[in-house]
Length: 230
Image 1 (cartoon, rainbow, N blue to C red):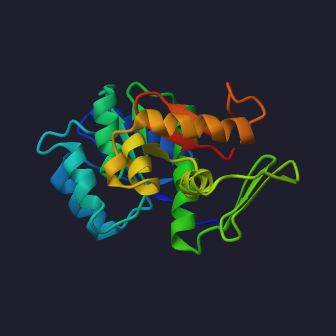
Image 2 (cartoon, rainbow, N blue to C red):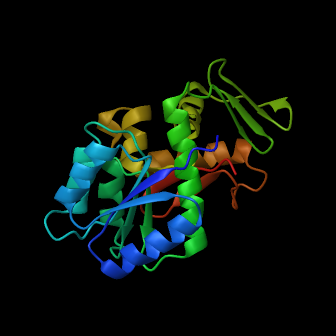
Image 3 (cartoon, rainbow, N blue to C red):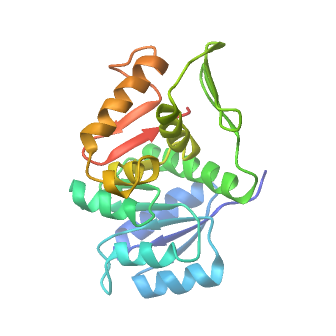
């Protein structure tokens, strides 16, 4: 697919806007910029960007409010770009619908890598969702509830499979502890982070070549987990 991806950048720092416009244009993205939340929301409605890069510290409203309003009508991937490095800010943004979170100052290559992931996510959301997810030697058949590693079937409990399926179904996206617990076990388990850690440890022992140095089931300290396919 040769379509040029359209990125909307919502940020009030002129230096950041100039840098992002230069970097993204050089890598064949079409770039639109907004300098506050209201302008960003209006441009998102008018132009339907493929990906949104969002600062949290906007002059007119909190970026998390912008994220929440965007999620009422669009599934375009949202990458938060912020100087805020507190776990609480990351969790709130991700729980309100952000797909990823980068802390300023950021590396160009890391930003581009996150954008490539966001593009894949956007492509999946516009088409039929994948029922078979491949991550190296690990193959997850969501429809048939079959997991194989290096060609051999791995037996998972019903809960282990549900947890893996939820993570893999949102591959390369950060999911918060509370989000995972709520989806897999129910709202009454939202605060049982240690319970989740136990199940993640079990999955790693069954699916990772080096469980203490996982390649696919990655921890985002204090925030949640990310299932990595690359």
